[in-house]
Structure formats: structure tokens, C-alpha cells
Length: 153
Image (cartoon, rainbow, N blue to C red; front, side, top):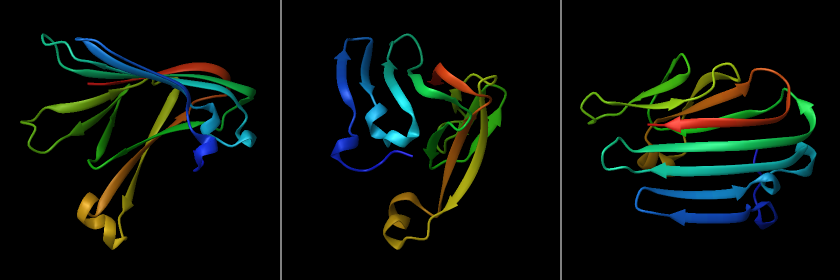
């Protein structure tokens, strides 16, 4: 889990924007305690916005660990309940005329699970409603170095 505090901030942050895309890349390895065993964790997020195609976001994480581990996962939070399909997660959004948003991933490298989280904090109920959903993607086997890609479309 990412730790709080300025000493855990991302480093080497770079941003670029053109007519067809915006991207940000950063090294988030310092965002986690040293005991987590992360040598390097580079994240690149690209918003593809081509007028002739549906907008898409690509998240690419390059992970390099000090030792091989099976104890690594990705977490995505959502107001809307996700549905697991082969190689993708589907979200039905209200008012979206039946269109779905999907999050594609490598189903051989990651194993998804969904957790419903009831909101009990009164100050958050007006913002988030009564429930959030955590999509947790555990790695399927031990790794030391790997690239993971998520495509939201």
C-alpha cells in the first residue's frame, strides 16, 4: 500500500500534450516503503483522444523488484459495480445509453476480484453514496520484473 507523506512522492514526473494525446510518466517506486522491495516502478498514463475514434486511456507499469515475489496487486476503485469478463472488466454507467466502459488487462498475468465497500462515514456519503467497489488484480505467479498494461475504453 502506498504510504502518506512528501518523502513518498513520485519522482521524474514528465507531462506532454499534443492534439491527439496527453501523457504523464512518473517513477512511483519511492511511494512505497523500502521494505516493499521495489527497485523501480515506472508508470505511464496516456489519454488518446482521436476525434475519429473512441477516447482511450492506457496505463503501463514497468515493475522491477529486488526479489521475486507473488505478493503484488493492482487496485482500482469505482463508484459503479464492475463485472469480470475474460481479459476485461466491464462497467455499466448510468445515463450512458447502454454503452459500457471496459478495463482490458492480461488475464494470464493478473487474477481479478471485486470487493464491495460500504460507506459508513457520514461525511463521505454525500460524495460517494452508500457503496464503492474495489477491483483488485493479484499477479498470477511470482515475478521480479514485468510490464503490466491496462486499457480503459
